[in-house]
Image 1 (cartoon, rainbow, N blue to C red):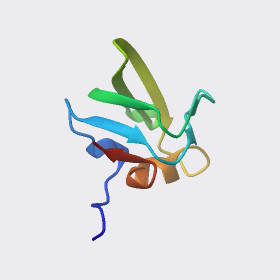
Image 2: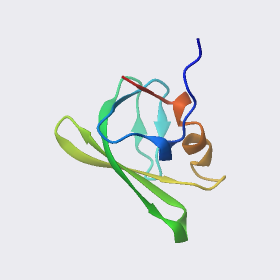
Image 3: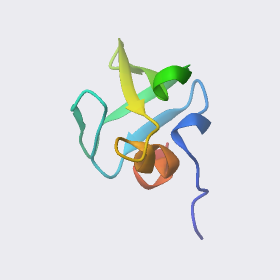
Length: 87
């Protein structure tokens, strides 16, 4: 049975996600295997193709910034289900 494919833009508010493949965000911060957080909401900055995931990580609001461009994090955004799993 294969898991459903989803993008970073498809995350569901209130759901908890766990990183299963480490990735680096726009700010160069590595999100390691085992990291988990509850997704709160997203923001999009069209001029910069910026996608911000706002999550609750251990009671702290954390912003995970990504850029939806081929030379940046588009591959991660488009294939987010290869990086995180809903728990």
